[in-house]
Image 1 (cartoon, rainbow, N blue to C red):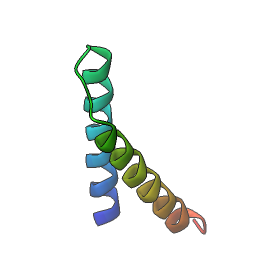
Image 2 (cartoon, rainbow, N blue to C red):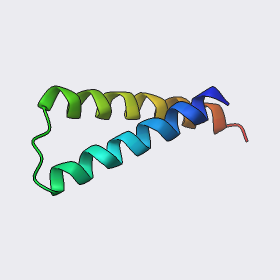
Image 3 (cartoon, one colour):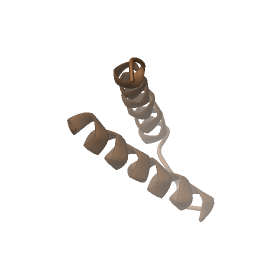
Image 4 (spheres, rainbow, N blue to C red):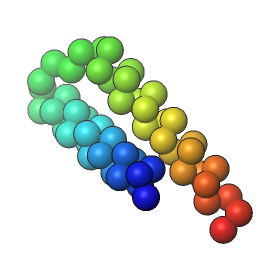
Length: 53
């Protein structure tokens, strides 16, 4: 359950950051890297949990 909530929050945060960048807002590189890292980690953990189902 927690993994789903974290995944949802990171997905939405990534979407907000992506849209802000498309609108011309400057997005710090460290923030882009952090979101990509966390999203990748959460996605991998979710895939690992659902492999046997």
